[in-house]
Amino acid sequence: MKILHYIVILFFVGINAVNAQDSINENTPIYDELAWKICSHGYSTWGNTTPTDEFDRAILREVGSDLNDPDRKKKVSDYLNKHSDILICGDDGVEGIRKREQLLKRSVSCGLYGYLQHLAMDNQYSVDFNKYEIINGEKETLLDFIYLIINDVDLAEDYDILELEALADAIEEKGGKRGKDLE
Image 1 (tube, rainbow, N blue to C red):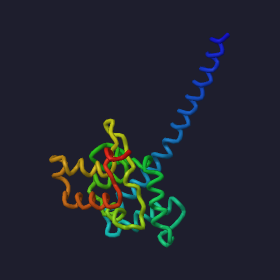
Image 2: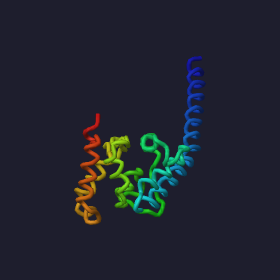
Image 3: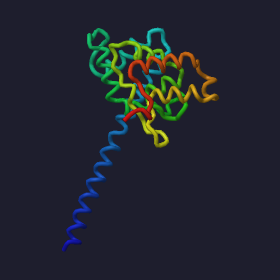
Image 4: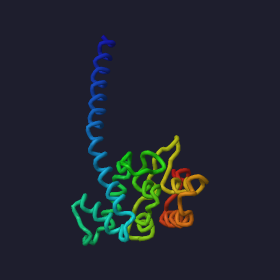
């Protein structure tokens, strides 16, 4: 009787696990669409003369607000913090160092980090620069990614290292850490 009881329990646990996996797969296209939309806005605005207003506008549209909102920078920061693990720029025609990169890493990878510099230097933004991904079994923050470029002779050839070092300093001043320094 115990064996039959365990089989029934395992059967229902198995069904719940399959259903949970199906719901994750159903949401993936929504996340991919959101990431594609925000990454595309980044590609089209980061290199412009006013990337901050233009990219903020795209995010504010997503949250139902606009540039005149007095809480604009908080809303943009909250959005980027909330969705950092979803905003992965993939195989969308823009080459980065890796095939898939988190949004802020992709801006660095593409060499279009004026917006990111603004996020790091403007104290009204509160972007969490300590969000991390697990890469090769290690925590990798945006700061790690920047230093990956700076310290790789082959990669460094394609970047303005002084600008990247200034960006790294601004992120560190805003509380950004390397993955190994996170608890």
